[in-house]
Length: 251
Image 1 (cartoon, one colour):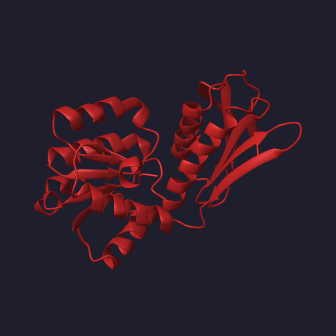
Image 2 (cartoon, one colour):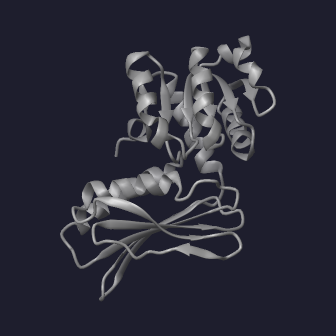
């Protein structure tokens, strides 16, 4: 398979190594200084482009790839709330293909399924209060993380007493804390911590006066995310439309 990379930071380089190890070919690499290469023959020859960039440019990158007739796998977060409906429309009405996920980790896919099932079980135990905390490296721009939002939505789908998530506390790299976890009974607080070079930790806690039930996914490095992105690209090369992890893994 021919792959184009959009974004050549730490994730882009990790994806490149895994793609090559799986026998794929990297035909184009687009970073901040060569956007003109979207129009190149090399980019247009790609079966799929894998996009990991910043929220401010992800939308434009997808449109540029679509313009060249290239399918996109995007792991950029923080932009789909504004542009998600348009992306779905482009895929449904104009034949574009986008595989988007807030997190490509295979472990997170399993964790997400467990999270939904646990919420389904806890729906009958109203004495437990639920909250979430996510921790990421200091370079991450959005908070809470896209993965935390996706996990929160999974809880809301299965827990009748909660119908919206809200931002909880934000612990900045300097240790200062803003915000609060105090919220209305129908709200799920999602707190964020930014420290060091943490790849990503997501913890969901159900707490009562008697005990606590806690599930955590702790990423050790970027390899799980990168492998998942390449697996998504392999899937996307053979499929069309607006795709996601629920299409790739059906638990």
